[in-house]
Amino acid sequence: MNTAIVVGGGIGGLSAALGLERAGWRVTVLERAEQFRPVGAGLMLAPNAVRALNWLGLAEELRSLDAAQGATGIRTASGKWLLRGEVPEVVRRFGVPGYMLHRADAHAMLIGALRHTNLCTGHQVTEVEPETGTVTFQRPTGETATLSAELIVAADGISSPTRAQLFPDHPGPVYAGYLTWRGVVPAEAAADIEVGRSLVESWGRSQRFGIMPLTGGRVYWYATLSAPPNSHAHADIETVARLFRDWHEPIPRLIAATPLKSLLRHDIYSLETPLPRYASDRVILLGDAAHAMTPDLGQGAAQALEDAATLNALATTESTVESVIADYDLARRGRTQQLAQASAAAGRVAQWRNPLTVAFRNSLVWLTPRSAYLNSLRDTFSWTPESTARDTAAPDRSEVGI
Ligand SMILES: Cc1cc2nc3c(=O)[nH]c(=O)nc-3n(C[C@H](O)[C@H](O)[C@H](O)COP(=O)(O)OP(=O)(O)OC[C@H]3O[C@@H](n4cnc5c(N)ncnc54)[C@H](O)[C@@H]3O)c2cc1C
Image (tube, rainbow, N blue to C red; front, side, top):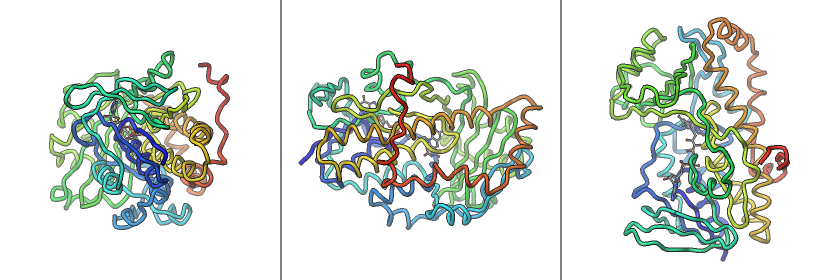
């Protein structure tokens, strides 16, 4: 039986563990947090993320959730639609629905699906030895121990210590120029606020507001603001309410109905300099550790799920661990790095501040035919695990300058 150690128990690590477990591997997950307590609020699962989860065997669990429906798209701060699509059209085009769920529910779904994986919380990895596949970690007792496996999956997030160890010259994550606040309105408070059943994002000048209904009647929202890093560190819900008070309904009502304890604030970072490779000897990087991207295309977790489904496909079909590692790098690097770039570019445009460029941007979006918009989603949403092994368009190492 092949063996793997997964460093990190976020969406990437848990889905990788599931993929390897289902390929018949013996898997250990080492997560530094004492409990699986996902930080975050809502999560959009785009059609490609849904296909990855289906591939990992979670189709039935997803079917039991309410899928997105109704109108989706982009509005102005005053509420005018710039781009309006209908979810059934997206489903018809891409063959699977999208879902919007609480991050905690996504974690619970993945943990619930694991049968044989050894899940170790409170285990902080301190060193990874790529040549031998040995991981050194601290147990919750403080005692140091080691463990070896044929494959190490580093899914230790955007600040990945493993990435820093493997690529000491890489500059690491870079601030994207804006921060986000996120909140969840409980079902009782959201009951008389009309929000529809799908994701709608409204654009202003260096500010955006997204609304995403979650399962169980809750409503998740996110707000963005261009600002220097670490600014508004102590801002509370009143600050967010003030920033968005003139925006269209139901934005001010949703902010007013948000319990303070659900408010999250994060500076947005991404890996602007792509990694030269996602594999080093027995280690592969997966999820944000490999390709942390801005949330502007809603693809960060989706790409981690694609990584995991790809790993499952390769672990099932490849004859050696070495070929799993090499083909994983080949299959995942080009696509994820291209999406990371596209996401950062989309975020820059969406955060524009100058009134003239904002008016120009809004006119362009308004003039975009719906069919062109749907076509632009094709490469991202149409991904299947079968196609990924053919997708070997990774940039040559010399092109990325590391
Ligand atoms: C504001 C915002 C909104 C987003 N919205 C969406 C969305 O709608 N849809 C979408 O697809 N994506 C979205 N994303 C992106 C998505 O959240 C991430 O891409 C995804 O969560 C990454 O998962 P991961 O498992 O790779 O990393 P993480 O979730 O960061 O998990 C890493 C894990 O590794 C553990 N760890 C770290 N170091 C160690 C160590 N030394 N030893 C042991 N464990 C360790 C950490 O404790 C953590 O549990 C959003 C991101 C942001 C910031």
